[in-house]
Length: 156
Image (cartoon, rainbow, N blue to C red; front, side, top):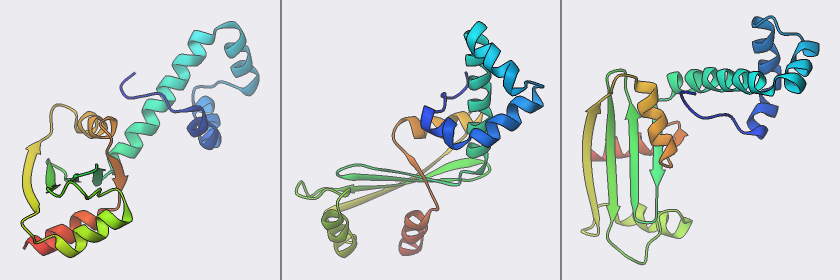
């Protein structure tokens, strides 16, 4: 497997797509039930292939990722050629950026000495989707990029 198997809930949500996937493999509903019963390892492989296809499609479209922890925000813009990072560090131990109170404090104090910024960029490795997936595995979530774009504007 290149990525990670979809969860049971994700597979249930993508049931119509999975049926279409099986049809492209010329596997009927009856054959699928037989596979699951008699060759579960083959059925598992089909689920893995489907999971990778779904991940590949999602990762091809991802432009922004965010990883927010108690005192850090790592905001990524995933361009065609590189990953751009906007990193924010809050040096106020009473603030948790994951809370509304903490984030509101940040919005009021983003230009104070209690907030540090770092920008960086990095070229992709051999497979940019694997690089994107690594960020997701480390806790990043896919976003529309509003926060990244807001920072980009205030830093200009």
